[in-house]
Amino acid sequence: MNFRVVTSRGWGWAVVALLCLVVGVAQGWIELIGLGVAGLLTFGLATLYALFRHSHEVSFHLAHERVVVGDEAQLVVTVSNPTGHSLASLDVVVPVGEQQVETQVGRLRKAAQDDITLPVPTDHRGMVQVGPARVIRQDPLGLISREVVHGDVRTLFIHPRTIGLLSMSTGFVRDLEGNPTRDLTDSDLSFHALREYVPGDDRRNIHWKSTAKTGQFMVRQFEQTRRSHLMIVLDTEPEVFATDDEFELAVSAAASLGVRAIRDTRDLSVLVSADARPASTGRLSALREAARELASRRRAERGSAPARIRALSTVSRDRLLDELSGVHLQEGSPSIVELSRLASAQAADVSIAFLVTGAAVDSKTLHSASVAFPAGVEVVVVSCAPEASPVTRRMGRLTVATIGRLDDLQQLLGKRMAVS
Image 1 (cartoon, rainbow, N blue to C red):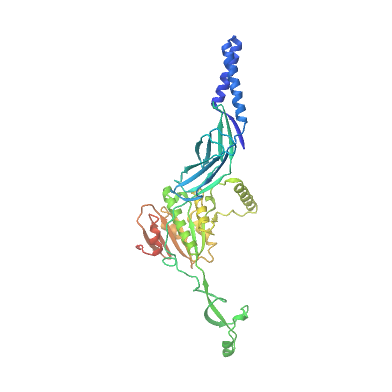
Image 2 (cartoon, helix red, strand yellow):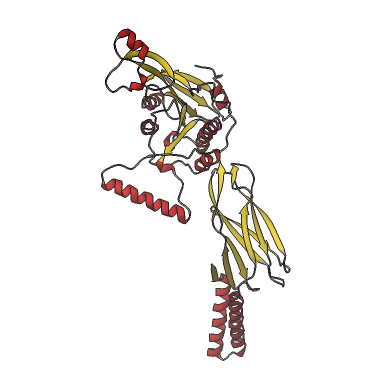
């Protein structure tokens, strides 16, 4: 895509040249007429210069498409000369989020290539759009600027900081995989007892020896075994977080818990407010956003309310961190109590639920959030308060753990924190 733009200097040059020509003709000043003609002729030559397309080949790529907040990220711009003659210098501008990264490429000899490495700021977690690259070429006087766009938009994922946690087989999270529970079922592996046959029982579970002894049909009853399933609910309501650092601590805590669960190959669900999604980018995202709006409109026409909670992808560590990179505080997000109620509808096989929120939530609200889950679900609230002393307290079946630093999560999972 090509753009030819008259610069501010070019407009000034053209206006002065026209004034000189008009005044010179009106007053009969040969000198002004000469200046006006020379100025317009120069402007025309600059326009012709901009019409010729440059022969540079420009490409760019990210040294790493995924980095942790605060780590070094680099943008590599490659400019090559495929022609058999030297090419003039030019400027290359690459948009990085809301900033512009600029560099100047000098004259290139034939078949030469220049690789330029530029730093990319990673001070804040997020999904940063990079590109496309704009090559700017101007005439020697800077009157006409020609811009050529190269490449597509790419995304740099700046992940939240995480900490390596101990295996969740100890501490708050017990390994329930393959172990019997108190829930009884008619078909499983762990035998519990015999009972009388009732219509609808599977005949394959009839215990024939006991039937022969008692004279009544007796069937086997089992204790249900299950696989531990973790749920992480991240609060995105702005009112419960005093500072941005407090929310970043909450995101990092949720990310660390999720990464550890994925590493332990556990079933995992990570839920956030549906309003906390990042802004749509790119053509594919725009199509998806249009489809979501159409679906919401159809739900509204049918009288059903749109979903206010969404599940993040947990198929891999990178996918989870990618999506957490785009989660932000959002006005109008449901409260932690409402999030818990929405999450409880998906908690049929959940063994433990982590509610990650800010320090402004009071005990009464936390208790209301915990009772939204079924009785068999252990609820742990991770309250994030930067620089606070780590402490854990019990509120009935609810455990509230306050962390002041991300390192405190290790104590939380290891149950080495002092209980008040």
